Length: 443
Ligand code: GAL
Image (cartoon, rainbow, N blue to C red; front, side, top):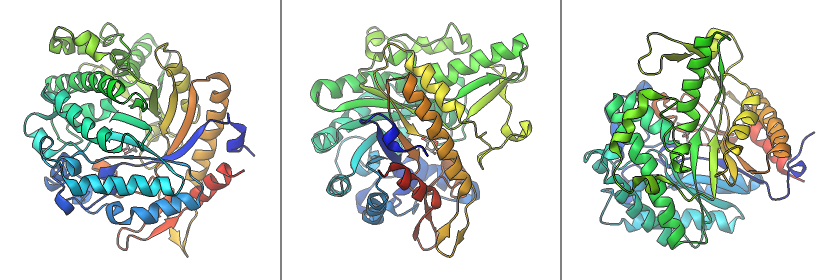
């Protein structure tokens, strides 16, 4: 049986989570509202659910950290809620919010768990969205000022910092498709948001590296292994366009390669946002990148899809085994994306910062026998091991997610955790997949 000890000695293992999905305490101790609180209020989340309570991680984090410790999980990736630190997004700092993350970080460290922090995991302060949010170029300064507060407070204690979580998803789903907060739609909204997200990463990564040279800075990118539906030329070309959007669109400008608009002419209007000096500003100073990979996509040409002229052929349509998100279980995808991103000269280190699966779980006599999730993790980690033999830039892996949590527009029905949450009692139950991970990690 494969064990963590079969990987390089410095390989990092952990679990991931995010503030808006777990903390709850939405208006406690001076926290300001975020765009996700507002989105839920506008009844945009399935079942009219909201992140207001979530897992009550804000009040129960000690219990969760102790559970991670009992499982022997040495690294915990979580995010900071911007509006808990700066309720209006800029200006006055909320001392109670600052103290909360000190307590959280200290509790991790006291229990031998290394905290990894994401600065922005999609919960923009609502006050900033009212000023245009990611569409407003000012956001690069708002984000820098917020990062400056966090680094000044926690920079001595926390070594690994990630800037934006999956910029393609929060700008695509939030500003193009309207499926995520803030619920905006259309190409011009998307291109403005996307441009400023890329610019913010370049700008703020250099700000942090200049002022806090001892920390490691990175960002996390959503990615997928994309294959064509058939070998017909139009499907092959459709697949290339989608691959450019899903895998290259955000990393390439941050690596100093510019936006890949030659391969994706539908997005070339993004360059109209460019101002003198931006080319340099877009280049990020990343010590590492995080890749978040769940599945592969099968792509076909589609005459009716504007801009992309391509569509995803869903896993259920293809009748292949899939998770509750209708994402195909395809472990080779993890190998393929590591290969793809390793090939960039500018990428120094790669961590898989998210990988995991949503399945229906049953809590029976204090146990959750989540065989499918365990099998998913086992198969992906096997491919990860193969990748570690070929791609030395690969340095670590984090399961999504520590506990079940608020799955954005999908609400609480989708369960990704290796620890089960009973949303009525907030009771935690360690699932079999977590016991499997514990045994895999133990020597
Ligand atoms: C990622 C996201 C996470 C989580 C996960 C599962 O895109 O960063 O917050 O929701 O997907 O859908």
